[in-house]
Length: 308
Ligand code: ATP
Image (cartoon, rainbow, N blue to C red; front, side, top):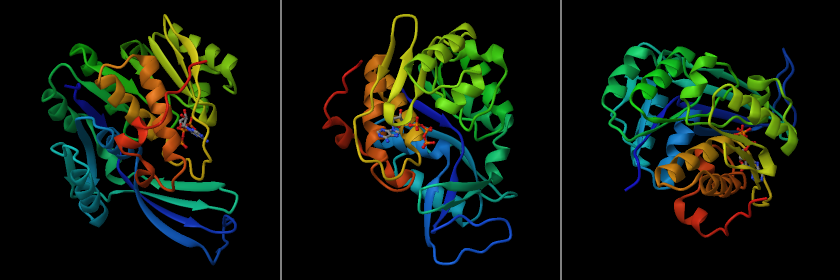
């Protein structure tokens, strides 16, 4: 049986307009196409972990509006335990307004709504119910104090915490040593270490700084290049399977949800990162966030990724 996974994070509705150009301040651009997708880093990672076979509980706060109700129903359809998804009567659900131009360039505004009120009292009840062993998967789209509280409490209870430090932000550095694993992308790794990550060498340097700060296991995702894994015994690039990417939205979320599942199943970190690279490579060949996430069979049929 695999270890239960608890994803603590955000749920958003993404409203996407694709048009020829992005509007400048004061400008109206006519002629785009509209898409509405379920998103939010926490929700995307919870959906990934469940689709790939994990036993997943999502801890989140959504509004009592239509978006919140739709999100909750969607989580239930995805076989996610929603006992700790609260419906906030006083706040709207989180919404992201995304404009994309014909070159794929985007501009995004996020109104966090209820996500910004996923506070410590809310988390305390949920955390108290979690039994050892457990894997906790966190991102930074909820209040940083909540994330810090979860890391401290998880440490006391010996839970394994995977922190995806996205969107880029910093947290109290003394908490880093309590993490089992941190998974920044290139720009997040730069914010955390001051090293501009552009290749394997710079990823290795950034990882070594994160080790000095106390994190035992570091995975830096490098887009189409794959992911760099570093800990006391392994320092290696695990390449992404070559694919034709059409939309990388939620690639990082797919990667992290997959990582949690693989680790919950007892795979080694190298195997887990390889599994995650396969899952995320499928997601970038499809449009959208949760709509792009594969099911388990699709990942299992891909050949094993060769470790460099
Ligand atoms: P996003 O913000 O787009 O969700 P991210 O910046 O958090 O992504 P990336 O490092 O871009 O994260 O991508 C995460 C993982 O997704 C990579 O480690 C890789 O495994 C996979 N991936 C991303 N882009 C590609 C691509 N073009 N081809 C194959 N795999 C990809």
